[in-house]
Structure formats: C-alpha cells, structure tokens
Image (cartoon, rainbow, N blue to C red; front, side, top):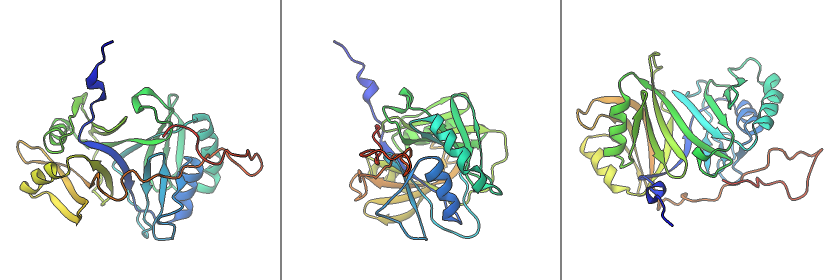
Length: 284
C-alpha cells in the first residue's frame, strides 16, 4: 500500500486554543455561548465574576468582564457543533431573553450564522472532513483584512511563524494543527479600530519565530518562560504593517497545554434526564 505522507504534515502552529474578548455582562454571555451554542463554563478556572472561560471541545472562549464597552473581533469565529437542528432550537429559545441586544441568528442552509449580544459574529457548522474528526470545536477564526494584504499575510506566517500558508481569491489560509485554521479574507469595507482582543496559539518551534520577531521589534510582551506576544502582522519583505491582532503565543511546555477540558451534553435536561449522558460523548 502507498500513502500520501504529506497529508499528515502539521505546520508550526499546532493548536488554536482560545479567543479572548471582553464583555460587560456574564448573564447575556452565558445565554449565548453556553445555553445557545452549547459550550460549557470551565468548572475549575475563572469561575468568579471577573472572567469566564467557556469550553468548546479542546478550545475555549475567554471572556473577561469589563464595563461598559465589549471587544469585537474584526471577523467571524467558526464553530463545529454536533447537531445544527438542536442548535437552531436553542437559539430560538434564548432569543426573547436577549431582546434589546445585538443578538441575531439565521439558518444559512449548510451552516448557521449568529451574532452574540455584543456584536461578535459566529458561524456554526456540522461536523465535516475539512475540520478533521471533531464534533465540537472552535475550528477557525476568519479575520477581515484590507484589500491587497492577503499575500503579505501569508508570507508572514510562512516565513516568520513557519506555518506554510496559501492564498486564494483574496483570502490567506494558515493551517493550524488538526483541522483548524486562521483565515484572513480581504474586504472593501472600512475596518473598525483594533480594540485589543486576542487569539492564543501553541507552537512547536517556540524560539525560531520569537527570534525573527525580535529582530523586527515586534515582540510586545514577555509574559514568562512559556509565553510571549506580538500584535502586528507585517510583510517580511518590506516590513509594511498589514494587520493588527494580538497573538498570545505559548510553547508546548506551557502548564496548560493539553489540559483536559470538561464538556457537557447540552441536550441533557432535568425533565428528560438520561442516566450516564451528562458528559459530551462525541469526538473532540
């Protein structure tokens, strides 16, 4: 037998673990990300009122409580959920309680589009081969970028982050680990000012990209031995700044890497309770 061994190759970015967005009210956030989308509030960490971590398979949303202005991702978060019909029923149920917010949703056929109470856009998909084997995940983050910047952004991730990237139809795609991606799609719309939100990734070669970013003066935070951060994506050839979004970059020796996350079965209710079905039983 012969195999295409390249199909198993993984770039340097091995996991997109969380997106961090501030929000002013945990009640509305819980209704959307937990009750409607089917996430699980982490029972062990950030259980107070100052922050909340919400698990989706092996990924999380980090949502610190800040008042009054929430952060908005300049793009769309893509989730994989096990059952789109159940998702649509949950979205319909929470709609009356989120009246007066920016919450909205629609059935787009192959997927479901929704807007959280604070204006962040999400796109929910059924499990599919393009997302690997997972049935519950934060599968991708698609960011809106200025016209003409996709090629330079792809070069940045390929040459600086050692994450081989591609460009097609005005969109740069950066593969991440097993079935995830960072996607940068050009838009003619005017982008709002960057407000400090961030994405967090784990990389295998921790020192190589760090050195390249240091040489260009792009490291913005030396967090600890396991983490550093940068904000500006530049064209490696010209040094031109192309897009701004903070990357929290962690090594595979970070204490939180591979931490098991609790995921519940959102179909479980007290009126239709089934023994032994509290936990999510699908593939993550």
